[in-house]
Amino acid sequence: MAGTIRHLLVHGRVQGVGFRAWAQDTAEGLGVEGWVRNRRGGEVEMVIAGSPQAVAAMAEACRHGPSFAHVTRIEEWDAREDELRIRGAEGGFASLPTV
Image 1 (cartoon, rainbow, N blue to C red):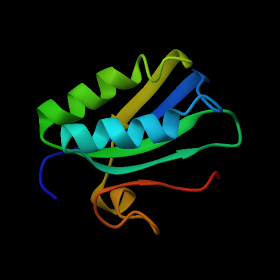
Image 2 (cartoon, helix red, strand yellow):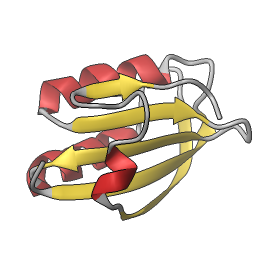
Image 3 (cartoon, rainbow, N blue to C red):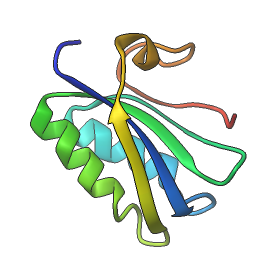
């Protein structure tokens, strides 16, 4: 996929509030590819790819998340194509198991 690829690590009350399902729905609505998964440390991690505008809109949406989430901060950095295509995330937007 051409375009922008970003890696996000979302901190706060972001597990047990439907964040992964919300992220998948939001990404699909924006035409963003990638994946999302919970981290054992309590964060939600994702890699998102698409047009610069769609990726920026997804990152901004993650600053709020679903209604029961409380996002305290997001770490965000450029990602590589190989980070986008990890096992279980081939095309579209996937919700992956916790790591």
